[in-house]
Length: 623
Image (tube, rainbow, N blue to C red; front, side):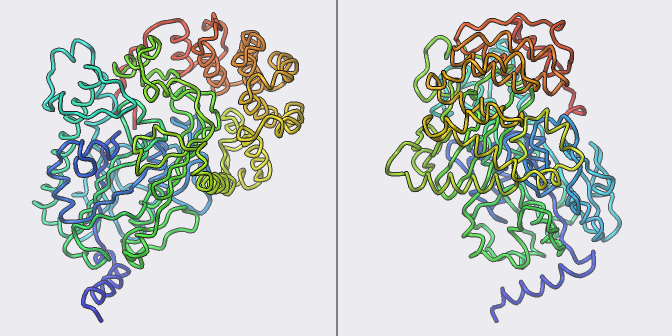
C-alpha cells in the first residue's frame, strides 16, 4: 500500500475518534469581493502575499462559487448547506425569518455535539432562525482561545474592509484621498466606462483587498504564535462577489465567482487527497462548505442538506476534478425585485431571467450611493455608452448563454447562435429540471409566500409542487412564439388562481405589440382584480406595451395593498415604469400608501426626485 494512502486511511480513523483527535477549522471571510480582484486568481487583481503564502501551503480552488450574489442569502446558504429558494431564504433581507428545514440544523450545531467549541466573530446576517445551539459565542469579542484545554474549535471571522460601503466616498474625498494603487494600472471590465471615477473606484477597491490580506496575515500569525497553526485547516474566501457595479446583487460571475484558498495543516495533511500547492479545477459552491467541514470532523452529513463534501475522508482528487456544475440565484435585493437563475457547466453559463423586462440597473438606493453607479446611469441617459456598457440599463433577454472561455465578462449572448443550439437546449432543460426539482418557491410573489408558506417553507413547496411546476411552465412561455403561447396565456389571464393570472401578465409582456388582444382584460384587471399583485402586473403590462396608462392600476393597488411586502412590490413596478422613458408620471406621497418601512421610504424618496436618504448604517445592525 502506498504510504500516502496508508496515512490517508489512518487519519480517517482518527477523524472519527474522540473530540481531541479532530482538526481545528478557521473560516476567514472577506465581504463583497469576487475572485477578479486578487492576483492569485486574476492577473489584473491586487497582490495578496499572505493569501498567496496560504496557497503554497494548501489548495487553490479555481472554481468556487457563492450560490447567491448578496450577503444574507449567501451566508444562509453557507450555514445551512441548503439552496435558498428551496427553504424560503432567498430574499435579501428577509421579510420574515424562515424556520430551519425539519431534521436540519445549522452545521456548527453538529460540531458542538461532536465536542467542538464554535465561535463567530461576528457577522451572522441569516434569513433563517439559527436556534440556540449553533455558536458557543457569536460577537465582536468571540474567540477560539476560549475553548477548553485540548478542545477542537471552529472559528469564523469576517473582515469588512472590502464591504460595499468602503466605496461610498464623496467627490471631495476622491480628490483628497490618493490610492496606493496606481489608477493607470487598473484594468476595467469591458462593461464599465473608462472614466476617472471608475478608475479611482477600482484602485480604491484594490487597496481594500490589500487591507484584507494584511488582516488575514495577522490572524494566521496569531494562530502560529499560539501553536495551533499546524492543527488547523484555514479557509479563506469571499462571502459573495462584488462590489463594483454589476457585481454584488447580480448573478454574473462578478457576483458569484469567489476566491477560495484552503491552508492544509501538517498534522492533518493525510486527510486530503491532494498535494500542497495544487490548484483544483473541480467546482464547489457554498452549499458544499458546511458538509465539507462536517466531513473533515468525521461527522455524517445530514440528508436534508443539499451540498456534498469536497475535502476529507472519502473525497478523492479524481472525483472532485469531475465536478463541473454550479447553480446560482438572485431574488429581491433590498427594495429591488428580481428573479434570475443560473447554471454554469464547465465554461458555459446559462442565465434565465424570469422577469426579462426588468433591467439590471433598476434603481436600488444603497447601490446608487456609489459615485460609479450614479455616473454609469448618467452616461447611459446621455447616450454615451457602447453596446456592452449600456446593456445594464436595458431590458434583458429571457435567456442568455455565455462561453466564458472566450467571454469571461459575459457580454456576448450566444442564445441565438445556431452553433450553440444543442448547448442551449441542454442547459435550459437542466436548469428547468433544477427549479422544478426543489421546487423553487420564488414563483410565488413574495407577498403571497410570506402569508402562505413561512411556517414551513419546505413542506409548503412539496405540498404545492404541481402548482409551482405549472407556474414555471407559464413563465417559460417567454421562450415560445406568441402564436404558440397565446391559447395558454388567454386561459391563464382568466384563471381562478391569482398566481396564474400574475404569471400570465409577466409572460404576455414579453410578446409586446403582439399581445394587444389582452389589453382590454388587462385594463379591467389593473383596477378590479381581487389580488393586488395581479393589478401590479396588469398595470406593468399596459404601461410597458403602451396599450394604456398604468397609473390607475398602480394607484388602485397601492390603496388596497395588504402589507409592506406587497407595497414594495407595487413600488418596484412603479419605479420601473417611471424610469422606462415612456412618459409615465406618478405623483405618490406617503399619504397614498398605508404601509411604511425602509424600502418603501427609499422608493418614495426616489420617485420624488430626491438623492438617496442619508442613513448611517451601524455595523451591529447589519449582522
